[in-house]
Amino acid sequence: MTHIRIIAGKELRSYFMSPIAYVVIAMFLLIVGTLTYLAAIQASTVAMQQMQVKGVIPELHVNELVFRPVFGNLAIILLLLLPMLTMRLFAEERKMRTLELLMTSPITVTEMVVGKYLAAAVVFAGMVGLTGVTPLMLSFFTDIEWVPLSAAYFGLFLMGALFLAVGLFASALTENQIIAVFVSFGILLLFWMVGWAAEALQGQAIGQVLMYLSVVNHFEPFVNGLIDTRDIVYYLTSILFWIFLTHRVIESQRWR
Image 1 (cartoon, rainbow, N blue to C red):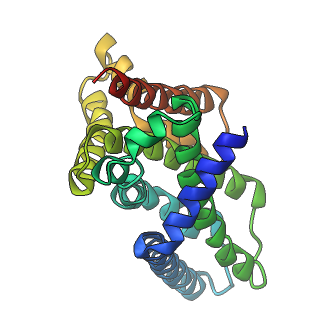
Image 2 (spheres, rainbow, N blue to C red):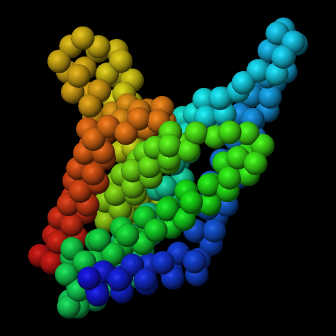
Image 3 (cartoon, helix red, strand yellow):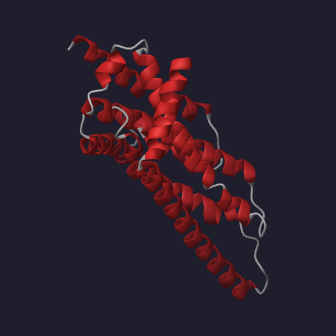
């Protein structure tokens, strides 16, 4: 555990010594804020229209009118932004020729991979945590159902953690950070398209398999305020799978 903390601490310092983390966090918060603002404006418009028709102030469900659309759009936002968080984790080590030094140090490959992954996960958790300011501010003006909202946040973190694991794998394949971004984006986009293929093949056995593999289909229950152990198992096993692949890629460097 000591080595994992050392690697994670080193990567966290590297994140905030370069503009990468600041740019990604700023873009994420700007997009989330804009989406929330637009959803709130839409909700107020609906309220005004209902008040004009019924003559009374309607009861609005903020979770459904504001937060559900926002979280529904965040999946594609994370798909675009998170590869930038992971692109340098191993690619920079390869480019700077420091990966060989790490391979000959007392640090194991598992500790190296897990430490780098945890650093990215901590940064992402901070990003998600900062968005919690918005519902806290809205809670002063309207009632918010915190349990469904917490489920949506939990699902968002699990999905982002999976995206980070894919990005870590992509970074382990190359020394070029731009290539790592595109490889990560390509893999994630394929998983996104699996959901479309599953809808086209509904009723068939292959359609059921593709439905299970779809990242988005496992995220939707969380957005609706439902926590299903099957969805949790899907994300956790997928995260472990991509971390395992990353471990195998880095381990193969010992024999080159």
